[in-house]
Image 1 (cartoon, one colour):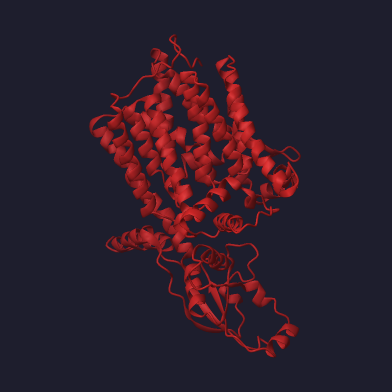
Image 2 (tube, helix red, strand yellow):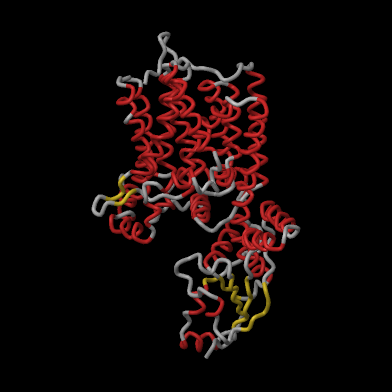
Length: 547
């Protein structure tokens, strides 16, 4: 792999004519406008996972509490500090907090377009950025207060600025690549293992360039800065490293592997990229097509895009290999745990490859391919939004119920408890609301009841949400049949509004009724869970308990 041509720059083939700087800015603005529109239309918001942790810790920093936590996720200052800064500037609001992952998602689209023009030409760059903008996984996590979109941006930036440094021999590009890599450590320290891809680069190109040390030094300085922050806050320079080691022991990994072997299997990501295409649609298939077409053309004659394609293949395959085969534990042998949201780390090179494949099509074939990519991708994005909104609809309704019954004690499942916590964080001017865990209600002892009976009795309600009862492993009630007989059912909650995606799926369900009876029944059965949550029942708890 020779990254330079004889004149000292990459010899790149361009898939289309290069427009002027003004036209390029207009194209970029149109792409970012389309990406922003998609992300706002299919905004996801609250789910009840790490976003509650990130926002809570960011606001805790803003309030002057810098005490470190034993939970690794609470100490990700690459998430917490930007969220705190946004809240300081614009207030504590969900959309303000979510601006960080949203801007990171748009930033990655912009990077793919900008460097894609230099790598593969304008036509391929536009298509690659459009594919990334449409990608269900990418659009979905732009609307989730998670660390995945910022992490993906930093990883992508490190590779693209590294390539730019290779192309121009500009040391500043290597420094920027190193800063981006170091920032990925601030966001998710575990992800730093991706630098193994860069470590293999000298072996592939069979040469050494001292400019690479600029990237290593910049990355090291950013990581050291993070460790110095922990030294100042906790007195331990290696606090974060030790916390990660304590949490992710070999025993933990072995237990996780035994509980769900698929999540640590080597082929996890390939299964989703090739078969379970809910998150990436056919971008991976188009990327494979680009590689095959390039290889066939390369066998016949040397191609002008060889260096660009070799770089993209090294980038995509390297990340896929590292995050699939990295050994988390040797005794017993367990591979790195995997999740579908982690695929966000390597979709940028896949989008560039896929854009290169699409750029080769012309005429009707191009239009058909573009529609085949865009329409299902938007539908899959709508489905992902709907799944989350339907899942949390009753929890949000439980928050509204608790707010309407401010003088009562309201109990609910874990997701409802977290929804109330999130509402207190991002709606500071609204009526404060709290939902207590069901476990607190069911664990009351007889002595506690006698003591409570001497105090003024407040009305107590339990919201039993059949949609989320099985979500948390420690839920005390796993089925509606386990509700104590002495509780009195008061009614059914009206779910909160749950977005454009659910509305769209309900229209599909309505249209499916026009199909023949058998097909209509199957379609309705498949679409109903995606568009309508299962009921949540409100129970009144007797003042003296259940005896």
